[in-house]
Length: 454
Image (cartoon, rainbow, N blue to C red; front, top):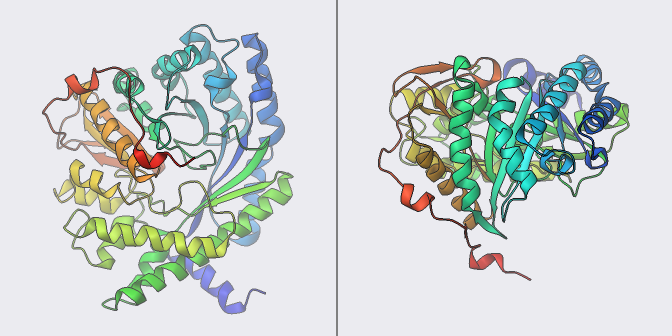
């Protein structure tokens, strides 16, 4: 039974501390939409997404209204399109037509993003993978709601350095193709290592081939709630600090569990996982950087920041798994620069550098996220940054990602405004020493020795 005190406590977290359910995401398998005809493939895709997701937005709004829980986003993720389009797509332009069909149905359903314009190429690329990857810049330029991801490595297979090199160029081309919107296309494109099949958060969401025909995945958030809870134990021991984070994560996850079960029941789609990631927004009081400050560092990026983030990430996971048997996705703490006002402030004052962010990604839920860099950064340098993050993920058996935005026409010190949840970001300095000779080698970096567990 839920007590009156728990109800009042939850209402306080929602009303005063920015607790929300960040997204309800329906994952939909499109494997049965594959057809030798491009037109039929597009029609089958639209029909199936409409069949499963047509009531998603209205149901989300009903749950939000009835329970008083803000549900910020309603989204769809689909099977990696490089698999779905393999039989009918013979050119990059064919894939762009599928992207536009996805964008059309996303608009009709009413979701803000649809993820899965993706390829999984951690060990090698098929012709279909290559065509989809080549199509990404045009697809991002011609659509509004499509999110794209490419998984270039894993602990089991190593890092596909041919794909890493290509993605450095694709990111630059995407930036050029959307330069009239401050290279916004790159904000919807992420390169991953060890990508999970059930991630509800964009831009890396796709519906893995091990998933059922359709599934409900929910992403909760609550940096403000954690920050408020820690204010009450300021100066206390690490034991008290950790217990406070765990208990708070438990409460946050229970809210997500309630929403997930209700959405599953009303839509008639099985419940999959809760992703309990602390996902910040540009709103004041909704910042992971502010939590790190409350733990004890003067500003994000100061010495001790990585240790604080490691502690936070681990306790969030420990609290969440006690609240739900089905925790998945990424789950932990996100550190997107443009979406976290505390991170923005830290970057603007020079406390937070790209190198310090990279160190922090060793212990957080994802990687270099929503980082704006000068538009003239070479594609080989971008590929080198991707390779560094993929190596961290591969060796540490965790998901890492790079969502980096070379903003055409901008340089260090400029600010870029993306709007909405994407926020704004200072253009950060990038190491100007080159790595082209490394990036231009062909093949893949082998998997680490601890990957061999059979």
